[in-house]
Image (cartoon, rainbow over all chains, first blue to last red; front, side, top):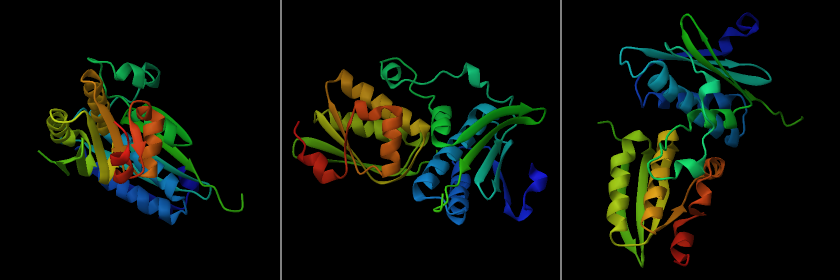
Length: 149
Length: 114
């Protein structure tokens, strides 16, 4: 719950809904991940997952509307980093998203895109897709593995 | 259009090297596709050199799949050099390593047999 968090450790970015702007969120993820002591490997995972969540929000959530925005919230906890990416869309119906297969996508005439959700799911410890009256949201969690664990 | 990639092609022996620098995203599609098509007109083996690449997103992955499809159609061979460990992991995750040969650096890729 947000009320139990130290608000000094909540970072909120509001970004234009425009491809390329996800790089601002990616740069922030690198800084937050480093500050929290994540390994370089996990920081790279986090950067890719957040980038893909932002791209989905821009392309599918906000459907390319240039006057829309996306909101990225980093919540730093002792044991985990939670990152939410919010847009103004209806949310992702995760059941309708097919697991991509390289063998299918490699065939001539196939659609090669559609890897974003797959990457998010495979690069984070937990992911949740939800929607509300205000829009769609992807919540990603990266757990922090301490040296003494 | 916003573009943050530079693509150059050079011939090294019987291989064409496509040097990539910048971001491999949807904005890079035209530049990379044209460079690969140009390289394919001259060589069967193409090395994509990722030495100057910091960011590849899912649209970039789609571009690479489309290149693999094109190469398979034309009987070409795609070699990959200088991917960071993170993107090597992404290649394995997606399955691109099944359709390309990944080398740690350009020298290893150039030394590979056709």
